[in-house]
Image (cartoon, rainbow, N blue to C red):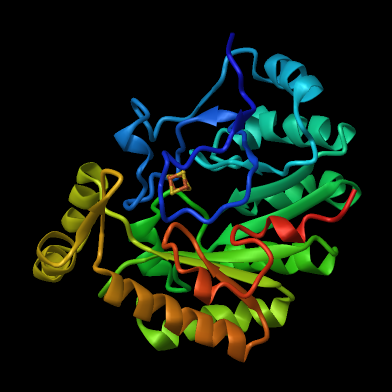
Length: 291
Ligand code: SF4
């Protein structure tokens, strides 16, 4: 039997601090084609999004049996607003169905298309987590070539916050030498705080062979830095290359300091730094309105 609603499984990562939840992806693969994305290491043709067969039928069946005291995270291996969604509206139908079950849902996206579904979001138990890795359009075009540019994401956040949808922002991943400078991150935090965002999640870049090649190709001048931090000084955890703990901790501490300064809660993602977490959950699911 094909289950589309599955318990979230961070591949046994000892550094994952997520609460129990379900993971749901209406699409297989994602068209945003982010350089740092890891889905291409386990999804064939990962940057070519396609709809799962009989997805909505299977979802209804799974929801009937699910423990809906747990939140549903949509999505962890593809953006639910990947480009074809503009026409196909599978995510829209998914949200409608989740709302009819009164499920608590966190939507993780880089797309302003989420605003299209505001009518559903305002009626149900939804929180939106927007990923913003930089406010620099040129850099964003290199990092996330087919995702909407940052200023469009910011406008979408503004609309969501104004409409009362609780939002968090993921500054994820932070790539050393690329989007890691203090002032740029401060600009993101201060801007989203002003919009009414409640929570920041951050994480450092994790290297797998395929995404590492893409990142190296985009920033050849950083090759020595990446090799020093990830290969010579890095550690392998669960098949993924991390920077050494000292570097990761100092990056995360910097972002937490900024979140504190602007009155936002903070957590890391797959870093294992529970001492830096100032929110009830790391992933932002605590922002889901109560049922
Ligand atoms: S939006 Fe997320 S899933 Fe899609 S390509 Fe970018 S990192 Fe991967």
